[in-house]
Image 1 (cartoon, one colour):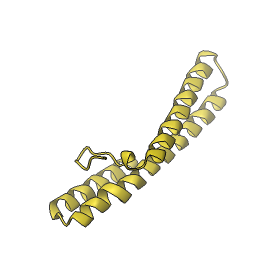
Image 2: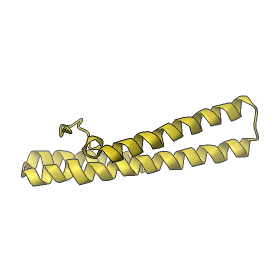
Image 3: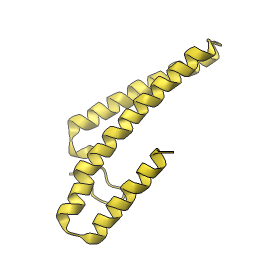
Length: 103
């Protein structure tokens, strides 16, 4: 069963989502290793920057999916619980992370 603490996990609610997220992160890890190899091989700067942009976009997609799961499970759980303090906490956490992501 997934946790619903402040540091809880929405990923654990859906095993296929967790597997998909891990697969995406594995591809990202390979992408970053490829970028490091490009730097080591003194590849053309624009090619490296293009790969960095692709990795950044892929990482944003993972972030978006995890946030979507957080809202669908953790925030929804707080709302359904009727616990006003937990609801405020979850919304504050969400606003904080969205503010940081927008920078």
